[in-house]
Length: 399
Image 1 (tube, one colour):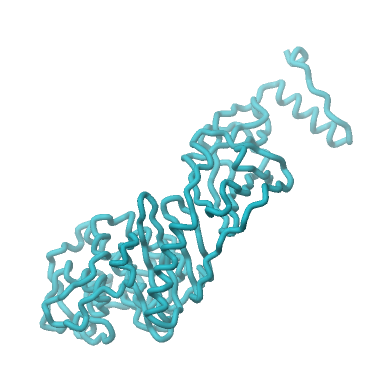
Image 2 (image 1 turned 180 degrees about the vertical axis):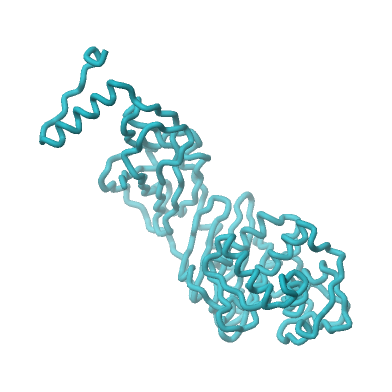
């Protein structure tokens, strides 16, 4: 593995050893009292905060997002329709906690069930959806399906025992997985995401004590438009949230606070910090050669490395343009090389933030070398083996 340090200010390879950048003020890290927290700027893919982010923890009602994701998929492929009415089983009716107060005489439209889950956090509504989509008609079977589907989505620290987050041994999600799931919902189902911004849903007038969305960010005027709160005595108070200001969107998840007041204050503080303490910076453009990598037995001895897309990241406002970065690749790279081949990684190390890895690709084709290249390479290897320095082979000799 070869590594080189790179300075964003000059957009050039500096050296293969340590690089000391201009002194900059440290970034102001967010001091959270949550047991676990994860904040990402999804516009640039920059991770702003990661605390115990991959620890599997009780997610409480925040795991309802997985039930919703599966339901949205079923709507998309036609296995459900919004106006379809589903029966309520005695098992679904038996749930306590936050409910829509459904009973076995009800047949409820899927659209109402979705609103009941999102706005009212209905445990019973989740079970109705689960039994309708379960491979074996049971909520337990749906939970197994949820786990399998989550694994395919890259939610590596999620295991489900039910559809709604009711306390159960082994029902776990990490805050990283929750944030990733929220991002999938926003991107994959823009037609349904506005449901998460609804502040009130009075289903059938039967539960006047449970009509308001518990998300404390909605209505604060800070761009928040979702997603889901959670609370049990074991999990504490948590929230998966998202907010959009101008062209930037952040997604965050945290858990383990001790009150609704602490949850509301933490949510507002995270949003304000994420938008006010960081600014977008363009590091490089697609096609711009950042550095080069050595090519073995190639018609050219090196190939330029470039990001596949324009590279924009967030930097703390106090740091300015200072950015430590490193290019790493397995080398030397063996010819032939095709333009667009992924060859290396650019590791961005903003002051006070988790590092970000960006793939770098070949900027041009490099064909296999001909006789001259083979002769020169053989000469170099022989000289290096016996402790000497290889003399370059003149072009005239090759002919």
